[in-house]
Image (cartoon, rainbow, N blue to C red; front, side):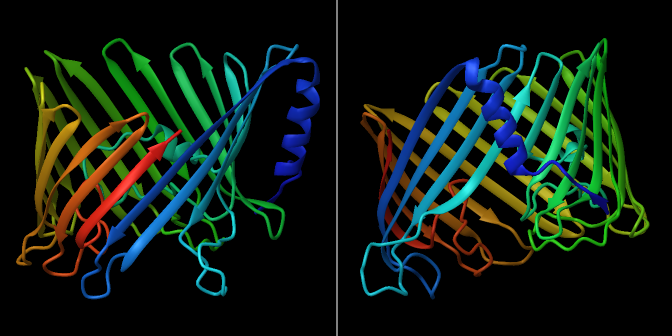
Length: 360
């Protein structure tokens, strides 16, 4: 645990003061969704649902060569069931990042990734490379580039105690046809309820080379807290409109992980087939779409996330209404109740969903 003096308020104040004589720009984005879903077995939206999102992106070129930046996102989701006034809701801040950047170094604070997660390159589904990728509190991360090396260091920020927690480091270097990456995070007693937070001490190294159009990645990860190791190899090879990827990960005393993915994209057709054996559990997905023309795209998929369970599936269409608006009609079935409201690549709700998305 380390005391931290640079808070979000201080960084924002510094960037704002420095930008006083700079050239600033502010851009706003707005998106909205209105739809209807007939929930199945208590999963889904159960009627009409809506969501709005407002984002603001600001940047300023400072006189000292730095660029100050800020990104904020606010979400309005559904109506407030605790109030007697329908279609009212509190405005929730969902993402924020403030930054100072130069050509060779940058500083980020907020909902930004950790250093290890930013630089790490795995070789398939590795059980021991669970670097922290998300957290409830903010992260403070510094990036630097020199020669062919890109390196980062970060801490998670415990706002309640004003301390820096879990040192994280990551680096990637390119030497000719090879890219070498290294990542490390320390063990911590800090408690974070985010599902992407991991308190363990983890070390990882990997190397990737491109030979005859094939990209080969070798990686090793060591979870020193749990005393588990993963050693993997992954090969990706494009041929025409198809990209094939295979991987195999040795997990020591545990079952090995391996998988195959084939993705096709040409003209109006896009399709993918994915198979994985994850710790002895077989998983597969078959998904595809076809651009009929005139803004209409049909899509469908079938997936099985647990060995022996029934096949889940979805089918439907999207229609481009123009002007940043898209209509979607989908029927999805979660036959074994293991997908929740995230069926397929589009993360569809079970049952019939009709919705319109607007982007302004």
